Length: 109
Image 1 (cartoon, one colour):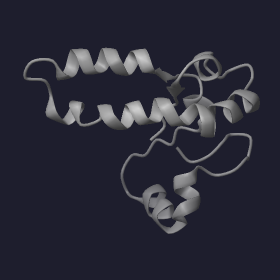
Image 2 (image 1 turned 135 degrees about the vertical axis):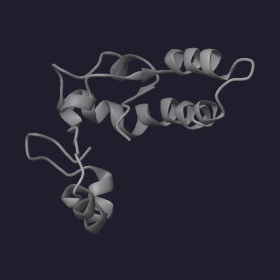
Image 3 (image 1 turned 90 degrees about the horizontal axis):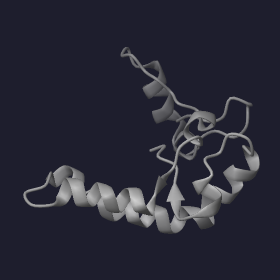
Image 4 (image 1 turned 180 degrees about the horizontal axis):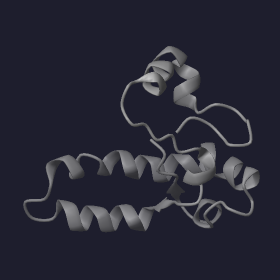
């Protein structure tokens, strides 16, 4: 991510380290920056995380995928308090309904 198409605030990662963001944007490799406007249209719900864990971590599982599960669960618990309500208000017509109705997070990082 990098910010919003409406000229609003920069993404937290870009605000936190502008020099690193500049290096990323100016790197001689193909780069796609997805604005919050696009990311807010989807949501990863707690039920999605449970299904991901059941499919990817059962049996032998995929260690790299399983390592993501604790962070995803933490995101579904914390983002409704810190981010989701603000984005639901800022993008009332495009924000995913789950952001206002259940534990979920926007997969933007």
